[in-house]
Structures are given as structure tokens and as C-alpha cells.
View 1: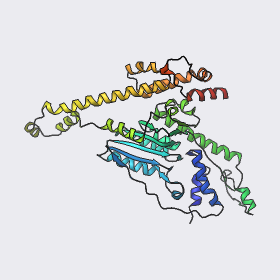
View 2: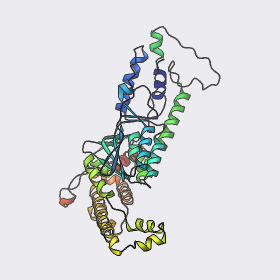
View 3: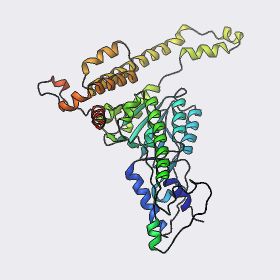
View 4: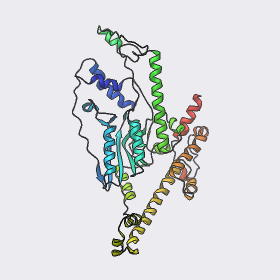
Length: 398
């Protein structure tokens, strides 16, 4: 029995969170088979389990993303949300794992299941730190997963975004007529035959499909806005565009340009800390009094922990200062960095404030286009103000 009808049902007339180019690739595999060609089904691909590097579990999120893997492995390569969730659970329970890094290279995929997985990852950050790397692509559903991480690194050639939804209806009635075929559907319920591929798409069916696409789009944009700490309007203003390089940082869709090794190095330093004196004190409370008296704890024992905590605090402070400085530089207001740092404003709030400030000046920025030549050299590097461009475009459209 062929699985082609089942696969087609998961591709056509259903909202997808996938980059357009990849969708065309998938369609190129399926459509010729609808004309009678055999569809060779491959065995389930062997995907490596997560590996641990410096205390960091690296979980792959690669290929087309689906709720369950059925039938297309040989053609395009699939990863299921269930498999990613299983590996996440295993890493959370693994005592050797101090942090989790999502290694993402995916154009996206199915809508079903992705938001549940994103929420699961977002909640898991309370137990262990979770970062992500767009290495190289994190588009659409893959970006929904990346956004659930605390921090997103982006390779120099990588891209993020495509925060949108698409659905495709296949009308093969003319091809069937040319082949002498005619399908007659007998049904009860006026809408039962909506989205049939054997006849043109009706207006009510089109409206129904559009309504579902809009609903999933609302879930998608709200999820990204919540997890990234960015206003919903700013996410919607991206209009599902693809972002690369510094434009990704300026739009708030990524946090730093860096390789997989850069992310691993920074993450390893963040999680590399010995057991604290607080943990030791908790253990002492569980120890019988007689044992505590026989083996008293001296103040010397806590000294190494204090030094480690001080070093950790310095490292995190430097990381914070660097991040705020980069955000302000990308926004073209490096002079504001000191004010944010002096108030210890969280990075998410800084990003939000900068995006709102740029949106308020959208019209003026769009007209100016480039920074004047006599501007201070530290501010002379031109930046792509994506938020302003989309805001201006939306205003003109209204």
C-alpha cells in the first residue's frame, strides 16, 4: 500500500511553517508521483543522538520538520518534533549535561506540533540553560524552535526568520479531464467536499483555508514575540521575510554573529562552575548531627567556591556589557549603552526599547536612507533598519 495519499494530505490544503523554496522541493517530489510514478520510500534516516561537548548537549534540529516521520525520508530528510522532544528530555535528565545547545539547520515544516515543542523548550530553561545556533538556516518552524532558546547565535552565512504561514491547494481537475478521468463526490453536509483536488477551489473553501492560515499565523507571531521579548507588531512587521547577518540582530531575531564553535565556547564558560557552598549547606542539613560533629566543615572549604562565584559574576557581567554595547551599536545609538548598563536593564528590555525607538522614527529614517558623511566615525557604519522599512511600508499601504 502506498503512503502517497497520506503524505499529500500533510502537504496540500494545510497550513505549513516552511520556507517557500523548500516547499517547492517537496512539491517536486510529490506531484510527479500523482501522475503514476512510483515513490521509493527509504528507511528511517539514522540521526545521531545528542553529543556532549564540554558539558553541553548538542541536539540536532535538521532537515524538514514534521510531527511524525512518514515516507519522505529518502527524498528530503525529516526530523520529527517528537524525536527532538525525546532528546531534550534525555538531556534534561542527564547529570553530565550542564546546558543544551540546539544545532539548527532547517527550512521549517509542519505547523502541527511545533508550538507544543517550543513551549516545552521554553519551560525547560528553568531547569537547564538552553541556547540555539542557526547553522546555517533557522526558518519558519525552525525559527519557532530557535526563538524558544535563551540566546540565538547566527553563522555569518546563516539566516533566520520566515515568520509566516503558507498553504497550497492542488487543482488537478483539468489534468484528469485530459486523461479522461472524472471524479464524482457523493456527500452530506455542504462543506464536506471543500478543498477537493478534483475540482476548482470554491470561494467558501478558499475563505476557510485562509482563516486557518491566519489563525496559525497569529499563534506563530505571538509565540515568537513572547519568547523573544519583542512587541507583536515588530514581529508582524517582518512580513515573513528572511534575515541574514547584522539585519537579523537589528530586527531582534538573533543575539550574536558566531560559529557553532563560538557558541559552544561561550556556553561552556557560562555553565562551567563548581558546586556552590549553598549546595554544600543543603547537604549538611540532610546529614545526621553526629556525622556533622565528627567531620566539621571549616571556612577553608567555602573559599574556592567564593572565588569561583566571583569569577562567574565577572564573566557574566562582561558578557552583559558586550551584548548591550552591540545592541546599541547596531541600533545606531552607541551613546545609550552606558545608561542601560548603569541601570542593569535586561537585554530583552533594551532590545525592545531600541526597536520601539526606531519604529517611532521610521518615516524620518526611511527618507534619510544613509547616515550623513560628517557623522562621528564610530557611528558611520550604515545599518539596515528593517523595522523602519516595514513600518513605513505598512503606513503607505494604509
